[in-house]
Length: 253
Length: 289
Image (cartoon, rainbow over all chains, first blue to last red; front, side, top):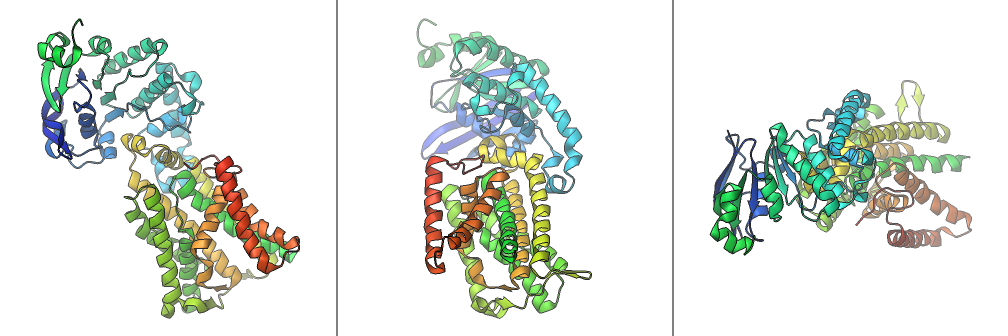
């Protein structure tokens, strides 16, 4: 079932075609890796899907609905979640608070309930706390629940960020270089968790430079250079593609 | 004793102002220098209703709160696009415009002559006049306002506001409607500032634009910088310290003329030292970057 479709999407920054007439589809439940050299337009494509940027031409369809003109928060509410390259946890807030913030449709966020019936939220907040702890257990961070996010190691922060996105009831995950900068000790743990993300029917698209990770996780690879897709297919097909090897992988891999 | 009551009454008014500005600055992470404008708008709306139309305190207070909150949209909506320094400039602009209107729209506000004869608030048979009653009344209002602000800060609304302060992009990517939260925060802070304005008007029984200048906005902001931002203790301590300090100077035998300038020098020095050595203020949670 088609979940996400980019149709002739173009984005130009001052003369440079960051994304050039890009058309690609993503099936539900699939794990796709987007690989390519720096400047290929991978992050720009993510930004367009996530609503941080509007395409200059073309459109993005999610569940057959156009995302054109929608704000980031509207797009997030549709179930599209983004893991940023620089993680972006709420630094001064605890890990638990980070997750509690992420839950959708919190009635306690309205002024009326916050100011005039503050105790009405207590029961729901308790449930959120339990759900948050369950998510933290999934990523192995249950002991760090009350730790300010900035005190975690980079790898732990990534795990926390994944748990946070899971709290949003996400359907399509956009992971921007999930394994980058993670020290070897954390590597396996993170890899495990990213693998499990799809177990529950979610769709994952991730950008990665680490080809071992790509081979391990991806069912499908999209290869981009200079804003265009020049190869799409199974890992076998793409990673053995001579053009891809020449432009990106190099000899001997 | 009367002197003591007066100090406490002023502290109460400024606690309401600093806690409400903290919603914008400490919780929301938006540096605003127009809080005195809201303080003044609230005071003037209520005063005009009471003096010109004979309204009683409570209805005038309600309209002052709602009116000031609505008028805050004039600054909050355009400011949504402004980041950092430009946002501060925008708030400065709003503050200046409000002062200029209050000062020059003499048909409405009587400009620099001010409005006198503001009636004391009265509830059923009780008239709040005289320092002891004002002490009790202002402390009660301060506690009520603080209670609401604390509820806000500790609720999911407050938590989401902090998340917007920490990382706006990440919060948006989690589904938070950033402009809506910012607008609501401004309106809430403005509403509370209006309450402070009404207390001030009812207590002094006279208001004029010189009480609601940019300097006043900076004064309220410095309570947050010195006392601390983001939590509850910080702004409260800041309000107490900055109201009490000039009075202490008086006790040091300094004549009023010099004391006023000394006060400014001390505030300036205190802010510089604190921002340099302890950016989160005396008791605050949040450091300005």
